[in-house]
Image (cartoon, rainbow, N blue to C red; front, side, top):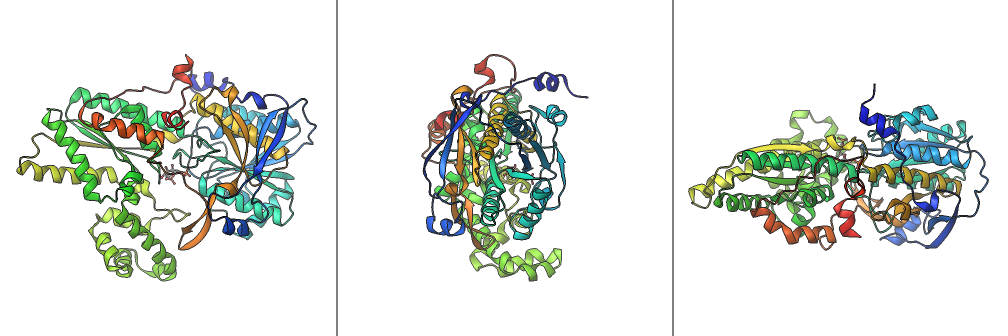
Length: 545
Ligand code: FBP
């Protein structure tokens, strides 16, 4: 059974750039170079480096294209709109030749390696149009980086006569897509690899990729509930709500939600790092806002905390960097240590300075930092309860201030973490249109023989008909970074720019939002109704462009 909304929503026809509605022609721009470390990236990607940016323009007549088969992979965390990327690819390849076929590799990149797949037919695709989730084929976090994995992938592609693999993923997965494209090209396999920019975190973006899909919907869902909490806070007038928001590293989600809901305090990890703040500085900053409102009789408020905050605090960042190197160098020995002795072992291997910081952290936090990593080697920040940690530390500070007469109010807290709630929401009109268009463009890139490209749809603050469609060489987004103790080519992560429009606007308003009750209640995503209610892009996009 499906809900009434899903039923109505399945009939929605996503909007696409006018340029790709009918026949298209390809325009090639100038050669590109990587954002940094050009020599290293060029040496590592001799076949896919320097390719031009390409754009699809309105053409005169539909080119005759032979039927071709495509395999798709969903990689990493869920993001609203994944099903629309897939339906866009499906419609795109069928439009080029109705005998083309789409295969979905199951459970993420491992599906390619383990030869687990299904053919996606129109019956299946129709069930999933405009729905949230990645359940059509499932996702996973297996890292595609070994040549044996690539060769296993090649076997199944040959068996299914697959011309191209599309990897729908974040920065790490698209980096791997490029490595795979390079490998298949170097081996002359004839198999193309195309990437699509996915992540609710919003940190896979640059001049040519304006936003990653899912960010729009997820931040609208979080903003709806933050608004509801603000209204509750303003009604009951007795709690400070500490709300942690997903975004493993960058604080884009938190910043966007702040722009939408105008909470009292918003922490931005990138600023904490730039100002070289300690955990105590952050706690003092929050406590000052609480005390200032208390002085006006306002013993309630909202604090937004980005999930990645901990990693931006310079002292902790240094600690994590040493932990990464130390664990990479001592992995074999580390694996032999009994679980209850691991924390002690880690502390004994750190420099005195970092060991002192490590030992000063609450046990839950040090455990997370030292022991629990995802397959890409990232700290799993979503498991660290920063919102609770900060609320407790602010309470302690305010108790001291009370004794000194610096704080006159009451301080009671509630904690929330919003992340998973937004990752599978039914895509907003923006994400439904954007994702479907990304899929259609990916199909065109394949038909044009491109490999090592990411599907790109730009000009997204304008109506969809005016969006620009094309492809960006993935190598153009790369630089060298240390991962698991080694320098690796990776897509440069887009962090919040402190001199960018969204942060500057927020910074100009936050003093007022801290003291006043300037809350905004955005309400739920609207799928049907006036365009100014239903089709608004994020404030981040508007302020950036
Ligand atoms: P992607 O970068 O793969 O899109 O995932 C992002 C994210 O949603 C982060 O915001 C969060 O820290 C992480 O995934 C949680 O991962 P998991 O789903 O494995 O718990």
